Image 1 (tube, rainbow, N blue to C red):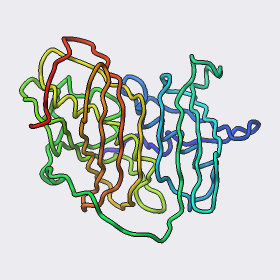
Image 2: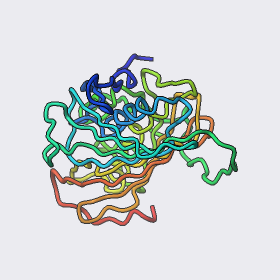
Image 3: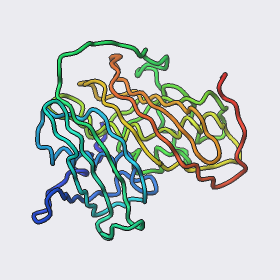
Length: 298
């Protein structure tokens, strides 16, 4: 496997020697689309929360990020506030900002993150979701096709992953057709992301923050082009896995009036439900007329 950037190293934090609850890091451009992936910025915030808690038995259960102003690659500052710390769970708030501008005003509001960290407890074990009906890993389509418009080659973020299409078409090419508002890809970090429990839960947000592909597929080929930066991103860590390949299956629920909402399931290649996510997106059109489409019955 070709080596890639190490997410754990690139999002590592160190404590400020003077300001309690403040952490510093330097985020390289390895994880950029145009700007750093919102999911990677969320991972940065979670690293700071994890460091502040300092208890390996408190593990990420859920988190929500609100993206107020853009974050750039380079020096970042994370300010951590432990909202509550009990015997079974802790809630933590983190604000991540560009270090070059430490004003608290609107021009550098940064990213606000809330997270819940839980200890394993005795309770019911109920399976409610079924594995999506998509191509198995062995049958999935590689994305490397040499096309200049291929986002997996254009953006630094995707160069850190191995990716195969499980459900959908290569929407960056001219010879494809519109489909349902779903898209699924198998993904694996080129530099494995592991902790004492297997796959590192803090490496889930970057994979989940890939939901606009479902909107691309629903709209189909044509003259309309858009970007879809995150307004918010929510992640629930559901189960642990020792596997490296993860199925990231996304579904657009609605796009309307310049906004869109989507959801995501993450499964491993042994049929284990690993994580769930939701996202609200800002649709920024860059070319063409916004279409009116009903993909609900495809």
